[in-house]
Image (cartoon, rainbow, N blue to C red; front, side, top):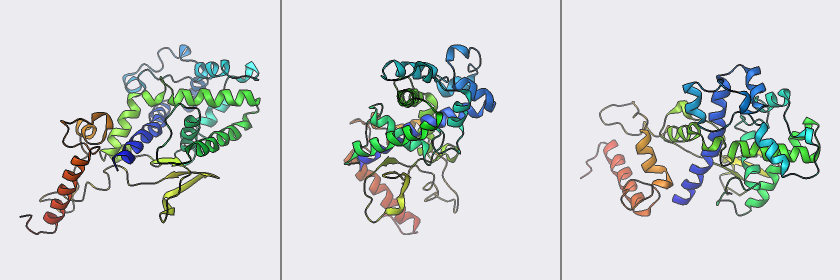
Length: 296
């Protein structure tokens, strides 16, 4: 179980790269956001320097053009003019209702994550025995969707690599403070930070639990799971019937669920078997107390 939880923790950070980006987009006028998304950050002096935006994006760029041009330099058989987004194309990718949008949780985000895994920008899921096949399916689907932009195949490949790097590369939105904040506060039970996108994407079988696998394209699914504490905080609140406990604070959340906090001195982290036994014992105690029976 600890390994599966670590996989989901990693996947949700990739999902929330889009959450952080989407929050910044929502703070801008729609036409301004599309124009800036299609250009370079060197053209954005002053626009994104407000404390609220800086806190969300950190060093992540808002404009895509630099990432796309770098990708184009590594792509053969392409027309140089194809290595850009028009404002209309940028607006299309930022419109969450479009299935290939980088802000669409039900289709676009799992597909972009799968494509990024294919491009080795994100580690593939250890839960999927055929991860390379699923990642190829996602990549091919994104290429197909972006063909409507009317660019050469080399140009489309450069766009996919550039945008995937923009989202999930070493300086992408996956590294932003906002992505980490969304992931942490979502697991802690703060419903204002809860988003869709599932707990993983791939092509593996779920056995009897077929209802948790949601198709994003033929051969690729994202998987629902009971992630985060939002649905559990009302389980047991001493002396306050029908009330819910508040979300867990950020620091405690990290110590409980973040694999990077696994340490022999960490007695609450869920990534060690000994600690999982403690959590099970606590669960049993709460069940007994909740039923009104003596725990002794």
